[in-house]
Length: 227
Image (cartoon, rainbow, N blue to C red; front, side):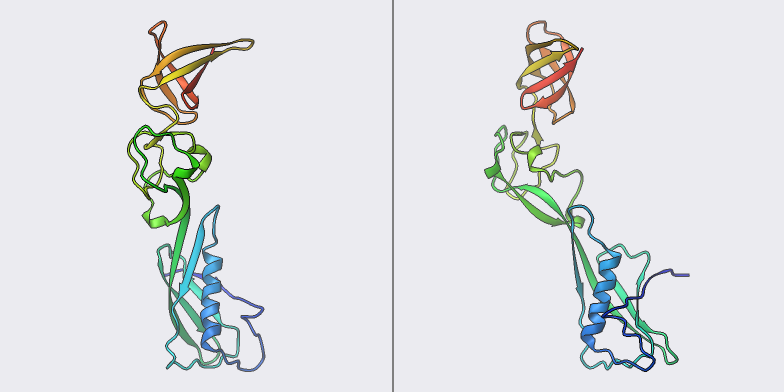
């Protein structure tokens, strides 16, 4: 049996009266939109855009003795949704309104093409909203994680930043190794043998001892190890 998400809206949408009430097309379309807004609330930094199809002007809406109901299939998760508007009085009737729901997420993209090895500045980036259906894999939506990093590969204009195309420390970089203990801190020079971003662990060769160690990326060309 198909389950439905049930919404009964009062206030301006539920004019509960003891006699039949007439509803125009605009009212019913707004009722459907309000039901969708309640069913698809925006989360975190995302935006939700809802478009409800207009009712054919040739359709005459019958009166109803009770408030109208807006029903959305409970398993609705895609872009296209059919909202069922119904009157369940002694002479029931239904209208189905097709609607589109578009969820977009903030993404940091390249404002212009960035060459491999370039240090990324605020002039290189911009925040845009992309459809959730077009986003694949991990994305970066925090400017602070991008500015100051380097392009590990060429990044084309409009391309979204992800952990694979930027690095605070890139393979082959000369880095500062900070070894710290409870009451001391020692700095050494080394070479990154792999790439990494903030708080990621990478392999580093100590230039003086030639020993390979595992260190945590702390900042641009800086790694730390705790002793």
